[in-house]
Length: 109
Length: 109
DNA sequence: TCATTATATAAGCGATCACTTATATATGCA
DNA sequence: TGCATATATAAGTGATCGCTTATATAATGA
Image (cartoon, rainbow over all chains, first blue to last red; front, side, top):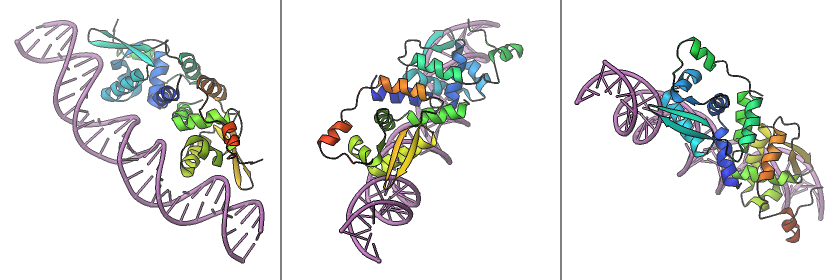
């Protein structure tokens, strides 16, 4: 891995909201509409974070009808490092389970 | 480790020049005057990178007379991760050995 | 077809980044 | 003491960041 790739990869994860997004994705694939509930941020902001994570090849998208389902890219050269980092972070307050309880979970599948 | 600490740590290493500085420091402690030769950047730029790395607690400084000798902080919560990352990076073109050969190595010790 | 829904893109904005040049501080030595 | 050396700080600058609001694209369903 060269310095430029490493720099881009680390820059992409050097943001609190993106770390949170990745933390959620480390458990299950999700679509953007769910992140807007989970992260307390606007839809365009999330979309832009996704683009940045995708450019750094941290995540993969799968278009399914109206939804875009995002998941971690296990082929990333630093995937194991990412898993280690995410494991060190506490569980987010809001969970997908709480969304389901509130009836806000979108059934993308 | 909380999200803010993780963000600060990752932001600090998300820069090519700082990765290079850390790569050098993974082999031996060095002072700034050596980095100005190794990195092809100005002394103030290096000094500012050092400050940022120190604020993120990646490195320690030891004042020794006129020199400030910098070394990796092995107590950092992500030290092992950093070592893993640095090991994935190629050896820099310029080496401390080449500085010695050119007579540019400062004897800080 | 037309309205709704999910997502992406564009443009704008204040904040931060990484650098520069200039200057300050502080140590060592003649 | 006074000068050279090593480093830090300050101020300024263009680029990028992360967000916002507004709008575009694209798929679904009545």
